[in-house]
Amino acid sequence: QVQLVESGGGLVQPGGSVRLSCTAPGFTLDYYAIAWFRQVPGKEREGISCISGSDNSTYVADSLKGRFAVSRDFAKNTVYLQMNSLNPEDTAVHYCRAGAWCDFDRMKMGYEPWGPGTQVTVSS
Image (tube, rainbow, N blue to C red; front, top):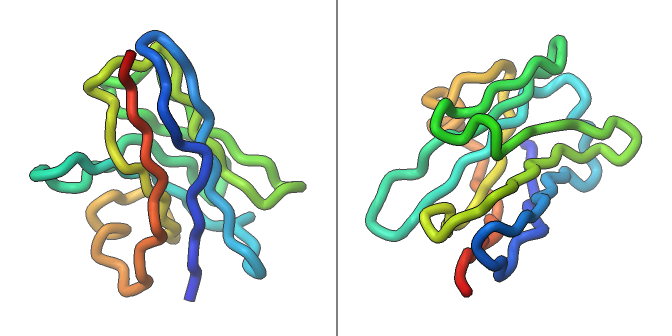
């Protein structure tokens, strides 16, 4: 059972940047696809980005392309979500999720518990 831990969120001013981290203490993420999700109150959790476990190809939702990027550091066993040019609409709790391949629906339905998430609040 893979338990992921998200970190790096906080209060950011509009136009600012933040880098979120996803780790798995005691478990290697090397060959797993890792997806990032975000959720705002009253809305469904949505998949926004993913990095594959096979070739490290990446995906970012069309609405976020150019501002968000996902990457992996094998040495640190960490997947990052770089978020730039943030605006208040990006305020959400962000979660990461592991899977065999990048498939948001499948990853959401996995039996592993979700991590605590990390809150990103964009406000002046």
